[in-house]
Image 1 (cartoon, rainbow, N blue to C red):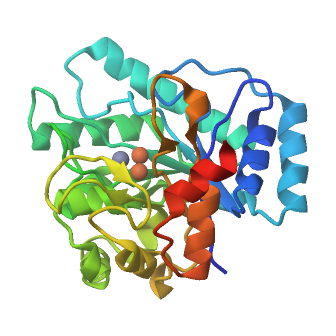
Image 2 (cartoon, protein in one colour; image 1 turned 120 degrees about the vertical axis):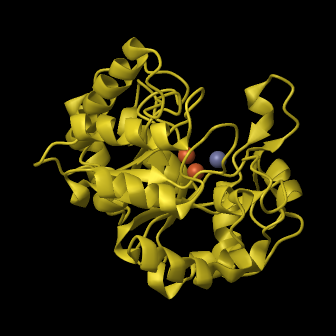
Length: 303
Ligand code: FE
Ligand code: FE
Ligand code: ZN
């Protein structure tokens, strides 16, 4: 069975229960969320009652808890230790985030490996390894999934070899997994039209069993552009057919697929005038037929 969902919100008021409701409204059977705002590290206290309510909602909607994904905030940068204070803060924040994930029962945590800023790739990789060895404990159930990056600015892990070296350097390797992002792979220079070749290479270098999550996004930019701007499914440079081959790939059958495509509408500062595309994208993916009027359909549905 296809395991598909999208990024959803997680608010202080309804917490995980609200996230489940949003995912269900899109026809999803999994989802990904930040435990607060993606761009900061302010986090609310988790409510036991809301977590229990969420468990019941998951059960009622046939969503498996072990397919859910948490995304660590993207300001956390383990690759740069120039400022010791923020490096130490990132480490302690991630320890707490793992704690929060365990309380919610979520075992997949996606993490951007980070940017080396004024160092170099080598140093960036070393910094990530050191940090992960401080963060990861022997008995944790949460797996840290390093995301494949586009190579924008000084990001590391736009190459398979970077991921391989980080995993090699980590003590508890079984706690480290990988999250593929199709937009990032395209922008890093990997051809999604030849995704099976990529999986072969991944298997040779890292081992395919390390893939724990796939972010399915189209890209606004050509292959190798190192940009990282997501586009709606079928509307970008990767295209609908190539993305379908990723989504329905036999070798990734049991891996959750998460959409992180942009909201549709004319953003003029008013968040009420942009609409989530996920319900429509998921429907299109299930039907395996591209809908060129998708964006109009979304606007008409929500307005
Ligand atoms: Fe990400
Ligand atoms: Fe992603
Ligand atoms: Zn991205």
